[in-house]
Amino acid sequence: MGQKVNPIANRLGYIRGWESLWYAKDASDYADRVIEDQKIRDYVHKRFPRGAFAYIIIERTRKRLHIYLHSARVGVVLGKKGAEIDKLTQELKKLTKTEKLDIDVIEVKNPYTSAKLIAENIAQQLEARVAHRRAMKMAINDAMRTPGVHGIKVRCSGRLGGSEMARTDEYKDGRVPLHTFRADVDFYIAEAKTIYGVIGVKVWLFKGEVIGRRELDLNLGARKASGGGRRRQRRR
Image (cartoon, rainbow, N blue to C red):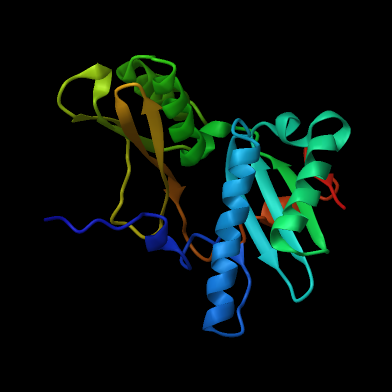
């Protein structure tokens, strides 16, 4: 039986950074923070089901909690004049019992550079009863036209098309070298809840090889974009 490893976990610390940035004093404090991080991510996804979040990065200092929302739909998250993000800030303060909490909303300019956004897009199409082959092939074609994407693999599993028996369909274009550590491979699993049952959607996205040292901070672009780019920010 094959032993599978998550491509992201396999590259953490080498060419991929963490989505939670903090240190814990002891084991109990570590567990509490991990649970709180998951609650924050679950709440944000539930609050904005169409927010198209590529990353939700949580950064902690001794007295402050900073959340970076990387979204392909900034307008949906911010709301009119930033009203939605102000509400979210107050709600997360109650959830985390933290007074000093900042939220930055960062625009993802091209959703086809994120395996998470591609997988969620395919899952939404399956829930809307779009044929799975059509959804998969359209996603592959759009991704391969994106600069910086060298390969993509998409796999759907379940009662595809309402068939009696579950099966798996897979399509691939370009290279996806999973055994090469320097290969920047993004990965995500989404679920489409259809009337026939749950269909799993897996997406592997190869974005080139990393030669030499790489900065692991996923927020590096946002930190450098203080004056340029289309970054939008709201703080409370």
